[in-house]
Length: 427
Ligand SMILES: Cc1ncc(COP(=O)(O)O)c(C=O)c1O
Image (tube, rainbow, N blue to C red; front, top):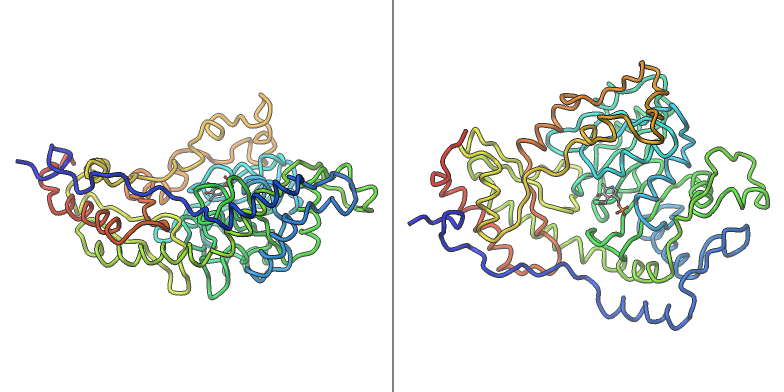
């Protein structure tokens, strides 16, 4: 009889894994205090003390600045809002180009579009999955204004060479650290490595408050612009005396007092929530390293990984089994894994059809290259190979998993690799 569950054998794991829940008494107490105060948000979209939000929002921002050693933290209602505000604050405008990663959540690349700018995709490094100074350099043109670098899966990008390249060309660098709170690069916290950094506080992230985000910068001018864009800039600039109103059409990106109160409690726990991820990854590394066809996550020597997820690479030519078949067999053992992450973003209808704002191809028609910024398949071969052929991900690294849970994950993967002969080659 077959050993593998996909063929009717007994699965390694028969009960579900614990769900991710890091909300404790402190968060509950903090929320009740907000509710008791009766003030769930204190923002006013006018130039007044309440332009900066209520006490919890401001307390979160001060705590964030202290924790990450950065001068200015501006809370927002999502990392998406934070990225949009960051591109606006950088002064990016219609027809400008912004170099972005294709291997990320879609908002990292849509942020330029909101300002009529054109995302230009650079390829990723096959080990860190991040864009690099070399791949970015190949995409820089006279129209490039900014770069959005993503610390994908919790591994910080190699930022020093990127910042040097940006300085050479006068570009603003935005670090999307949505997945990387608690990671470090050369001893510095991820999220603080560029001109503006953006964190996410949505449910899936290492610390969360429902929906939320924080943008950070050491530049007071950028901080001022982030605050204006967050909160109805156009209604504020006259009384505030802001002379440069470029991109200061404001939004409502404001975080509520409830979310800020939860996020403040979560921030206190950041180290305690990252460490289990790192411990889980170290355990998986020890169990899975060397299995035929599987590579454990690469960690650059100067980096601590935040392990938003645990990203393995699969080589079907070594294992003899197609990746999807392998992943299906692991899932049948009761351990959720996914093959690939997101399709390289330029393959989305938005880019393939070049329909973003309105029907007539704006802003792609502003491109200086005959409306031909390249979004064809084959544009970023490494990202495509990672997504379509190599990457296998498990999110089972989060706090709250027991040693037995982690053991089941490793056992399931090991079992499938050892019995892969049962799966046929199909190659
Ligand atoms: C890399 C990255 N950037 C941006 C975002 C957007 O975050 P939010 O949901 O807070 O808007 C996410 C969320 O998944 C993400 O993973």
